[in-house]
Length: 80
Image (tube, rainbow, N blue to C red; front, side):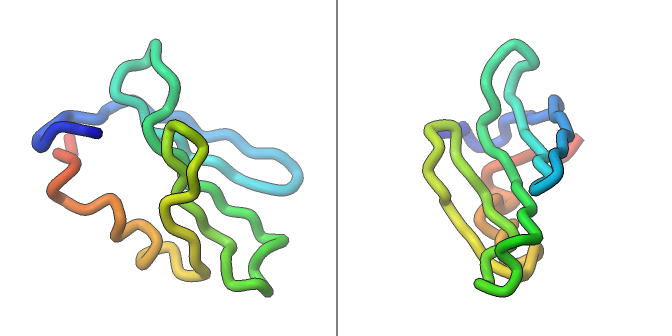
């Protein structure tokens, strides 16, 4: 888990034909801590946005990005 007050300042954006991925890193040399994935194909099922943990587990999924991102609350991150 991330310690309270940890600064996360490394990220990457990638895309493919079927999805767009925003990855969040603690250090640039590590694997992403979280990936925020948009998969438009899943919009009719109500799960277009997903937050995926480092181990591949889907933490939160939904059709509203703001609600999905609430899992990553202010207690975990310090915005730089």
